[in-house]
Length: 612
Image (cartoon, rainbow, N blue to C red; front, side, top):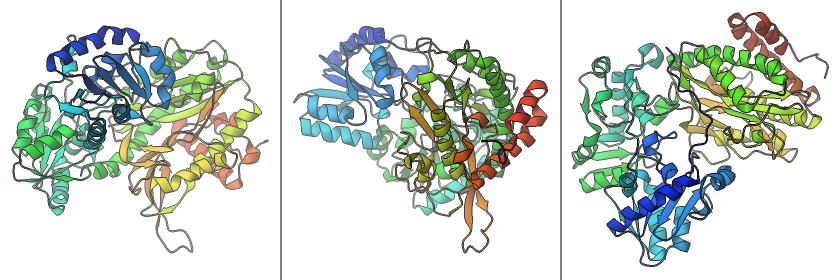
């Protein structure tokens, strides 16, 4: 049964939030004898998508973006965002109350060093900061002559008198047919890894790791089927799950069995204190500074190492890969119906971005297997599509106008897999510039699909393949080329990625990554082509000396033929396109009918030999 949470298009937040709530926080700070308080976007679980009760930055400032921070002082305040949100922050945050600052170049630590006054006391909640981030803040405070004060009870939470209740979604077992390995086996083999690393236990604070390890799924977080919780896994494979016990059904309790102890999440601090004298593995990139403080105060020896669940989770087993294949076939049929609609009704010039997103959502909602969207649909027309992470609202909504491009990036959550696909569609006749740039993006996409690479290769080493056709013409895009994707978990999953940024994580068989090069012309149009692909063992290349890895494309949907300049494609690229479209036709034609089937046949006709 579909449990989807429909996407909304109203703009959360706004300047009134700061006008109403900044004074409330300042009243609490005065009572604590503090001059200021640090408010990051992150929550206690380092979630990508926050439950309403943890939207602290939104409550204080009115800013609803996915990355940011604020510093609230008794006589001044600042809000920090990155380059994606420079326009949005000015629309949502009162500039008379908050100075607009750069999250990347300056950040809260830079502001403290340059703007804080000697002797000021600035509070922070250690649950909301990583150890590295807090170290940087402490260094800046020391240089500025400022005292950072850890608070046990967050004053913003006290000031937020109408704060929503914590989510209490039911926790269900993930069926073995989709998980591919029971949680006893998972716990035991990861316990062995913990012991080999000379530790007694690992503290797990990332909800996706806990969900995968124990084969459970929840609904506490929008767009990700996560149960908010924490866990301790011993080297013997036995675990303790700290969670709101009301979320657990009798079926889930039976599923977890006797080797998973169940305790209220309010006892997590006590559970950490019980690790006295133990060597404990904790990931400083996912666990908060508070976890490290609790362990050290309790007398544990702390190993700062990667979450031991992260890489086993990223390298999908055969059942998870097959589930991803089936989810993409199912989702691909929806995309075909939507692309047909765009090529017919969507060409009228009267359809807008919201209507297009709603149409796609309604088509996905017809699938009984759908559990949720995997993220809010990016539905961008005209110049809006030039914002790579654009989110349509009632205020920004544009028509799919004749002579423009429409970019749609969307995905679904299914019990057997998570999807994420981007397609760019012409509305009317595309210009020569649009076709040229689209084809350059396509060439990069194909290169990253066709590549064979030796074991030990990282995504950083492959990133240039997707960019080279653009680079050679003097263009680029300012986002990563590929992110990891979970198995009915987060649509953005580490540690694997394909990006310019250095990565030491090699790509391994079973890892799913996106392949999404793009091009964005400010105030004009945006282009992106995104498929998900899984790392596979490739057959040895004839005459070669080493076994290679490669990619199997999972996403199935036509790439718009009228946007392709055939003169710019090599014979090998044409062959890849024709093979891909033949696969799309084979897998999806049985799932559509009538005019949609006729459209699919034309959309997947061979390009080789076609008139340029």
